[in-house]
Length: 113
Image (tube, rainbow, N blue to C red):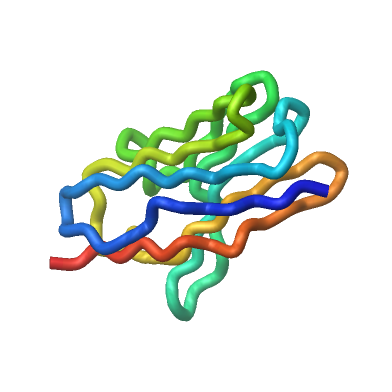
């Protein structure tokens, strides 16, 4: 098993930036890691995922604005959020997968003027 703890959420104005971090309790080298988000009244959706080999997939809605990265030495995954829009407001969840799926508790991102 792996425990995931997110940090870095907060309130930001449209056009602003945030950096989310996800710290894992063990080595993530063999895990696919990613970020999902869930807005009020909506289903949880994929934001970005990074495979153990480094290949990355982004949701169309965040391409060119968000960047996912991983530091296997620090057991941490990051999500850089740039040019934030009000529709990016959601709880962001860290995700890990190797045989089973694991989720963090989530961190709130609110984009509002």
